[in-house]
Image (tube, rainbow over all chains, first blue to last red; front, top):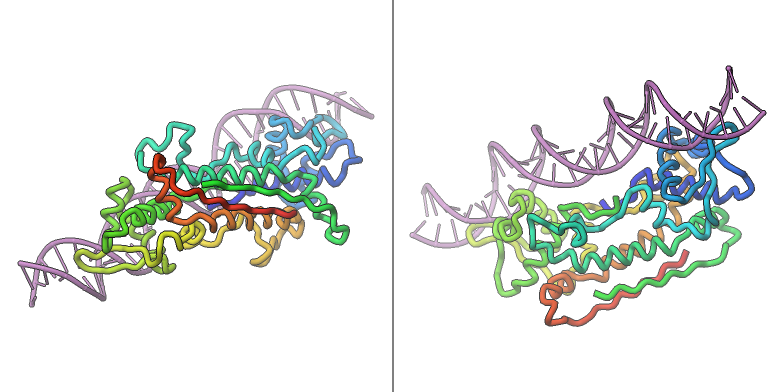
Length: 152
Length: 152
DNA sequence: TAGTATACGACCAATTATGTCGGCGTTTCA
DNA sequence: TGAAACGCCGACATAATTGGTCGTATACTA
């Protein structure tokens, strides 16, 4: 119901965790999982997905683990969600893929597709860095302003 | 995965259908369901929810059915979705209700709550009327512009 | 070569979404 | 006044998706 999956949440949390520790060479899935109390094996799979998507670099063996493949500032929340949950569409039937076979009636979808794009735009404007900075509320890190326009 | 449920879709479709027929006194759940080829009993339940939420007025008995309780322009997509799917939150754990009991670690959530508000704002700015108008693309109905700002 | 790590597919469990059934109350109209 | 057309409601049943586990293979380090 218009909600992020836990996997996406976990993925964002993990990337944020890595972003907060730029000095470390790599962190294992277990390290991160323990830090948040989430299932290690599940997180491992998520991190593997992020690796395949090119957001992380992995290294096996002792002292191996995962590290951001780019600057935290250069990784958007959208990319993370997309890598984990696949392309998202607010509407069940997207005009892109075959459309609503059964209901050629879904005329609602066209306006909602705009909403979809708007949300995607917002998510694209948020970086992992933004998430990590919010860890220090007193520091009052620099404000990011994203402006999105929706024309129906 | 950040997607509207079919119920919400159906609800929006039904309201749009009603909005396109302002002259009719009332339409039965079956009429609308048949028009779109969706399960009548399911739609009936959805319309009942919308009635309870005050978006529709119902009338039992022969020639009964449902009608918008307000102008289509005065009913937002947000209200419809909210009435059907309940309050939506992008994050699994909302700081409102108890927060993440198990993970006091969900620091991601705070920035994402902003995203949530942004999406809600967009949805609030779209009326059933907007959906209905899009039925006539050649008419090129008047453009609605919603501007949303997101400050992290 | 032992130990620590990722990689990946298969599988099961839990949750949620979708749809159905049956009975009841209301209104209309012949 | 009673049958037909409708809404109302709760309890199911079924399907789909998510969340999580297991086992095994592979890679790297010391």
